[in-house]
Structures are given as structure tokens and as C-alpha cells.
Image 1 (cartoon, helix red, strand yellow):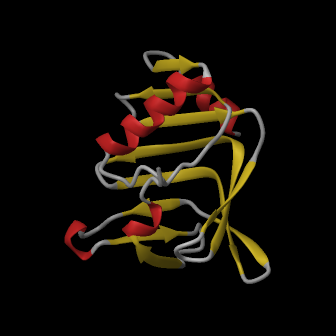
Image 2 (spheres, rainbow, N blue to C red):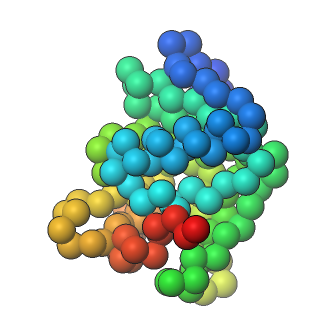
Image 3 (cartoon, one colour):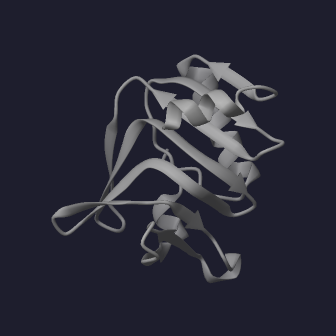
Length: 142
């Protein structure tokens, strides 16, 4: 499904290849939409694309990755293709991201910062359930 979505939004999109430039562009995108820079800790990126007209974004990495956000004690899995429609302080219709809750992996479909002053970021599931964490837990660690 993700590959079909990418193909349909590829026309008129900015597309970048190569790990270094893709990493830079993914960080620039997160900054542009006012999201924490550590939100997408992907490695070995092979392609990043952004169709500004539709808001569609995709990131492709060589292999899937599990990352532990230590500040909140959560494991998050990123597939080889991560896609979303982005707008200011929001990533919606997200694909390729799951969070481990107790013993099961839960699909994340929406990430948003509703009130920047609160310092909170909310992660939503396709079923409508959500969980809120401090934005600081997702800031890029140098």
C-alpha cells in the first residue's frame, strides 16, 4: 500500500536519495512542521520525498528499525517505508510506525502537538485511542 501511495504522489514531489542528504532533509522537514527532530530516528535512508502540494511525505530506509525512547521507556518500530500527510505540528494518516504497549505492537496513525505551550505530543491509533508524552522525550540527542 505504501509503495502505491508513494507512486501516486511522486509527480511534482521533491525527492532526495543517499543517506546523508536524506537524513538532513528529514530533519529539515520535522523542523518545518514544528515537530521534534528526534521523532524519526531512521538509519540508512535511501530516499526521502515530499509533495508540498498534497502534504505527502515518505521516507525509505534499507531495513526496518526498532528504537527505544529511553525518556518514556517505549520501543517504537519503523518499517522500511514510513509515510504521512504533514501539516503544521501534525503527521496524519501515518504508515510504517508501531509502538510497543505492554506485550503488543500498536499501529500509530497520527502524531500531533495541539498546544505547543503544554510541551506535550499526542500519538493516536486507528481505533481512536491516544497517548500523550512530553515533547522533550523526542528531541534529537547529539
